[in-house]
Image 1: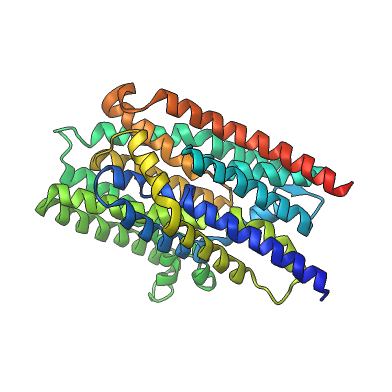
Image 2: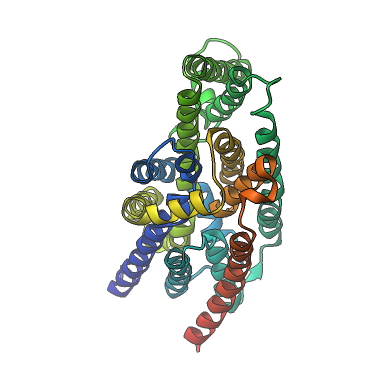
Length: 390
């Protein structure tokens, strides 16, 4: 193995770690627990500590799907060289750092996706239309689906004819069923999911056992939350909010690590001694450190400036956020957690306070930052790679 190859990969790895740190400090570190902080269910510093650990766990156990899509699925016909990988990572991290400094949540998925496509096109690659259609559908539908579900939940939870010791446990049951069917790398040899893994231990038909375990997981989650809310309504709601925040933080790590380390995956063909797990582990460490050191500012920005959240609105925000995040992980689609959380916050806020609970000016700047970050990243990636080629 040539020394030049090792040095270039080391440079790309450092850029990837910086990108992971920026992600932890920004989107994946701030957004998952922002609703819980807004509901006074947990302090900002505790939220930053937990989101770092959970993001690391998600990166290591579920991060391969999105990482492979970012590294190899966005442009056809070419493989990004080491120089291109460094350009992608520096552009993505730089734009994200601007977002953190200004307090506006620039979407990491948009910046990294735009820069990868721009660099790939500059190298003569072809569009991956199928992946673009899939990714574009998730990006466009997220505000409507996430905001719509959040609006519906926020409309139901405070109604007197829908007791919270019934509605909230039902939501917990749905979440429990989904958790049992999440795909994890450590379950790949036994069906991929916790429910499938459990089914291998039961002496009955595999499909029936998987369904039974899934339903049982949902029933247990519902029973625990019902008991907790019944004995202490406000405390129970807040503890459920923290649990949902934990699941979203885990999902954030699983998705966002791909934006940091995915561009490195094509380089592993020249470095057979470096496994994808090692790369994911390093990315998870970067996210953890970023969450611990710099996430509090963005947590405060999202939790306080977009809306005043209580436990019920936080639940309405986090349930669809978790479902959309895991759908994106399953599809291998890079997704913005800023978009997911902000859309859900707006939806839940509209149900409770109309337009009074959300700052239109802040929201407008945020949407403009999302669109502009993709266009700018694409242009910079394309131009930078053309200059390097010359």
